[in-house]
Image (cartoon, rainbow, N blue to C red; front, side, top):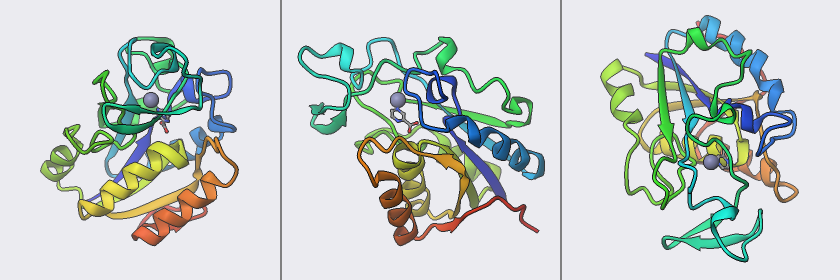
Length: 205
Ligand code: VGL
Ligand code: ZN
């Protein structure tokens, strides 16, 4: 079975949000069209405790955008974002939320970040998404959402490694581009890894 996998379409990643992705709001209408035609829809939700270790605010002398070591892993320092229960962590208001069949929350452990919807950044713990998809009979994924160069990219890498046939719809993705070229590089890495990269959404069948 085929599923649509929506990555982190949350207020904090939209223009005006705490970790605003340029044009992040543009993905919503594409996601809504995709939800309409999808057999099954899963959404990930970045869901951090207020003291999450990826937040620059938790570390003396570390500024937003700095790279530092968190629990043995390379970590980008982010502004406080997607704090559990806060408005910024909610799905975008205009997203067709009623069409979402299952939500996977990630980034809940304060000691480790989780860009991928499947595992934390150290592949130490799974989020349960793979088990859920397997038990639902999902073997093909169409992925879109935010941000192309972080959570979309790492979710796609894991999806391919886990054996899912994986499509990425670029019109439904936007990236952070902390450094010029990050988004283009992410797209090439996903393609090289085995993802089918599509410019625009078109329903299967
Ligand atoms: C994300 C940075 C930090 C994302 C989440 O959704 O791509 N990026 N947390
Ligand atoms: Zn996050």
